[in-house]
Image (cartoon, rainbow, N blue to C red):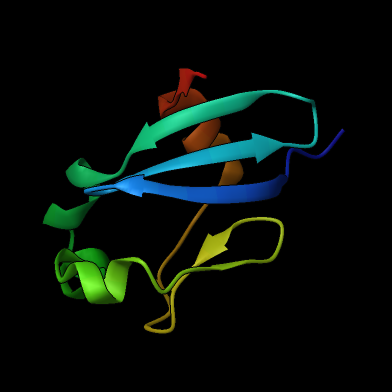
Length: 77
């Protein structure tokens, strides 16, 4: 089964609560990704909170994150 995100909630700071199509939910802190150029403009929280969901999380600047990364780096919620 292909892992996808079915729902996402903003938890504050740079953390998201992701629900996956396997029934699992994970809290993910994305702060470490902000060091990378593709995510630099997301340091501005007004940009960070403007994410979209289409099987994964994406932003208007073209940044996106693979569901597998979110699952592996998340903590069970």
